[in-house]
Amino acid sequence: MLKEKLRKKRVYLSSNSDAEVLLQVFGDAYGKGNGDGHEAVFNAVKEVHKEVIGGYSVVALVANKGITAFRDPNGIRPLLIGEKKVNGKKICAFASESIALSIQGYENIRDLKPGEAVFVDKNMKQHSRILESGIPAPCVFEYVYFSTVESVYEGRPIYEVRKKLGEELAAKVKKHWPDLEVDVVIPVPDTSRAAANSLAKALGVPYEEGLIKNRYIGRTFIMPVQKLRENAMKLKLKPIESVIKGKNIVVVDDSIVRGTTSKRIVQLLRESGAKKVYFLSTFPPIRNPCYYGIDFQREEELIAHGKTIEEVEKEMGADKLIYMDVEGLRKAVGTDKLCTACVTGEYPTTTEHTKELTSLRKKHIAQITSKC
Image (cartoon, rainbow, N blue to C red; front, side, top):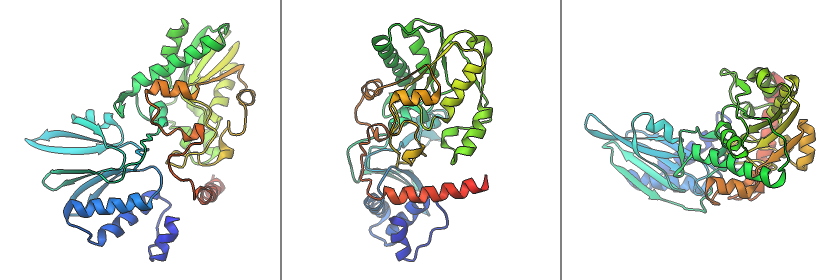
């Protein structure tokens, strides 16, 4: 692994951050002085592409030279560049979401291509080059969950994608469960609102806000240990009983990862008097770990791993559990050039060292758990 390679070069890391590893690989290559100006930067990025396997997007200051940004060869993680004029001079900025740039008045916003590096020198001159290009595989989870609805990712408006997810899910319900009795559709705030709304319209049933989110609780699924996730969930959502009591509820969520949130939601709806609870996910069953930056790296923590949909449905306590299928997901996004490894098990890169990664992750979680 890279950490061991660096240690043999007498480079010792001071954190568990993968960003530090990227920095050391880049810095070591850049320090060799292979080329001048942007060529030296691009040669260093080539070394990162060669040594670092996985998903990453990087923005870095190069002392007294300028700023560089680059994406992994498969473009798994997002990275965009935008331009604007300030006091008559053109400047540029980088971000992982288009809204972060457009809200500040940046224009000509575009995604860096897979394997592309951009270097902006002190005179604001841009140098761009695709250094290593693999099969494009942007993370599908960005469309479904991570990105805000105002953003545009790989040329596709997130809001429109999520509306389409709801329509595709509604089509599946109509085809396979035409007699499903539904009184109201409610979203799990906030990321599933657009999908739930379009699904309700397609099914011809009312859409309501039945769950209110506590704005002071963050995204629970990315919390490092289960105990923290469970404690946060107790405070995260509050049901509106007048919307729920005595009704057959369709609750729409963007995805189901560990099931912590989903189980709690089903419980809350039942406690609020729901007659029946139908749980719909705009994402297919997540049965495989992600090794590209999303925090579910172990099979055993995924509720759907090794289980049928019926078994997950029973564990969640729902009257019916309906997942989006892979075909519908790709249709909603509008492309099959996606990383769907967490669903299909087909990874865009080698997974040679994932056992070591999982082992390190288990040790890290054990350390955090012991302090909770």
